[in-house]
Structure formats: structure tokens, C-alpha cells
Length: 207
Ligand code: PRP
Ligand code: URA
Image 1 (cartoon, protein in one colour):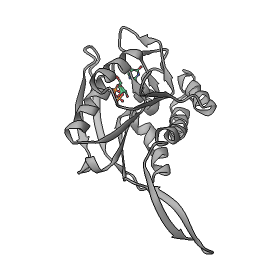
Image 2 (image 1 turned 135 degrees about the horizontal axis):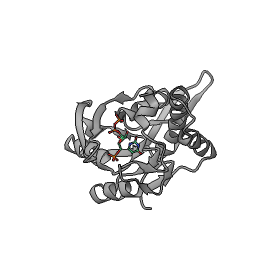
Image 3 (image 1 turned 180 degrees about the vertical axis):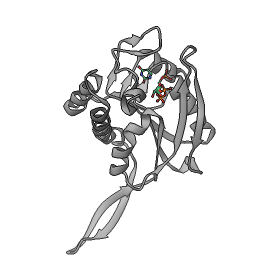
């Protein structure tokens, strides 16, 4: 699938399976989701632009690199929060914006309840973070907002995607790079991913 990177690294797949396991309680779920997010970030940032930077070691000058652009991390509340801390540890200078979206249970339509994003987003590399891509409604709503705010470079870091969600995102944002650990079979009648991992927000926060 064009523009979709399925991260098959053994540690990512091992941890994804622990997250799928219904016996994994909130404490372990939080820890494993955080670990898997850090592993996925390596792949998701592989194409970040760098520019040359010359520094002096204690012994001699050295040619190195630095990231060309600053980074903004945008977790989609609530479940995206579970992937934020470990990513922030890897990019400690990143800024963080928040998008609060809630899917209505019957219509499955995502509505905003919170938006707080740094100004001048067009300057940044933006990483949109949401472990679940089900109908795709939340990802498209988040992308609509980022597009209104003139974001130029954005990628989606996701854990489990449904084909339906990928199709919807592709219709609206054909060139959005998507990084995921799995593309599952389909959605059930209530809009949950099968086999998926259940309700990520509830499992994360023990609701
Ligand atoms: C979940 C999940 C995604 C969304 C995916 O959030 O974290 O944001 O559903 O579904 P979609 O692709 O069909 O839009 P939810 O709205 O349940 O909120 P929560 O994270 O607070 O549980
Ligand atoms: N949101 C979740 O948390 N899980 C799903 O399977 C679908 C939407």
C-alpha cells in the first residue's frame, strides 16, 4: 500500500501482541504502549531532513548533522497520550500540541472537544500520534485541522489500522505517510477494529 509503512520489527510485533492480549492490564498496557511508540518513532523519523553541523570534540573538529526543522508532536486525546512520553524522551526539544476528539458511539463521527497547537505550524515537522485508525474519521478530522493551520510536513504514527480507515484517509490525504504496526481485517458493527486490541483509551486508563 502506497505511503503506508508497516513496521515489522520483532520487538514492535512482540509488544503489539502483548497489547492485543486481553489479559494485559492498564499498568502493563501503558508501559508496553510507551515502549512500542519509541521503537516506531525510529522508523517514522527516518526521512527527517538533516543539515551539516560542525562541532569541536575535546580533541578535534568533527562534521556532523542536526535536524533541519523543529518538531511538533500532536497526540490525539486520549489514547495518543499513551505514546507521547517515550517519544518526547527521544525528541526532548519537541513542542507538543493536543487535539481532543471523541467518537460518538452510534454515528461513529468524531467531534472536537479540545485544540491547542503551537503557532506557525508550517515551519515544523509534525508527528500526529494516535494508536487506533478505525473508520479514519478522527485522523481525517485531525488532518483537516492541521491543514487549516497550514501544516506542510506531517506523518501519522499509528499502532493498529483498519483497511476502512486507511481508505478514508487515503481519499482525503493521498500523500500522508502512515506508520503502523498492523493492518487488521476489518471493523465490527460498532466500529471497533477486528481483531484490534479493544478500546485503547479505556485499556490505557483503566476505565
Ligand atoms: C479512539 C482512538 C482514535 C479513534 C479512532 O478514540 O483513540 O482516536 O477512536 O477511531 P476512528 O478512526 O473511527 O475515528 P475515541 O474517540 O474512542 O476517544 P478516546 O481516545 O478518548 O477513547
Ligand atoms: N478506537 C479504539 O480504541 N479501538 C478501536 O478498535 C476502534 C476505535
